[in-house]
Image (tube, rainbow, N blue to C red):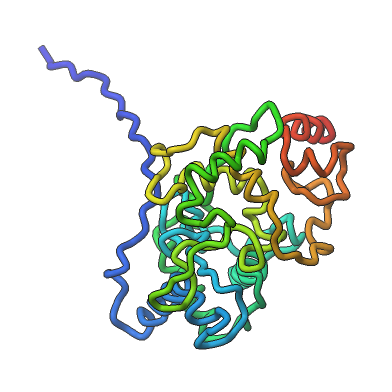
Length: 301
């Protein structure tokens, strides 16, 4: 009698979050030197481009890795895993197809409240090389698990800056200061140990983290220092509220007249009109956001 084999089905294997390649594996070649320089530019941007910058004085003194944690390698820490795989790509904010260089300069002008780099400069070429090295094993057109920032479920109420003020005092003020001015690096006298979250040295109103959903997802998985995705100290409500408190504080201005040329493409939490709906700028900034999303879906239908 022939032995029967069970009809075995392959077991579902959970997708693992993206892990950055080990920086020690960067080759000791001219190309590897370029990648290492790009990594250092991300980690120590202020040293090169800050008010006392070695190369130029074009930024506010923050480092790129103040927003893109661990030099852009931390899962759910606004990492660079999908940059090489998804750029060039169309972005609604500019209404154009953008290159990696354009995206990098956007961060310099918005998050670092600075000026753009020449796309052909040694520094830009190094930054782009580093991002290509980081994403070398990511399939073209794909975004791996752990890319970017988590999207939290919207609240059924407006995010509350006053509640967020309490969360900030308990969880954030020790590092970023009660006045949100951060802690300068007094050892090197370059940049910050902990960056400013508002005021003249922080990101301007055009930065991605000025959108509440981005800031809320970011702090949920990454703040206070040492937490990670799935190991947060904040509830979703606390994350939304502290994001509201931070983004209710004063910060540098920016000309946004060319952003979102297609008005209906504006995100739910973009706090500047005009809008394709009748919701107020206040609601677009603090929520509740579900009615805005539902109205947008209704327009599409």
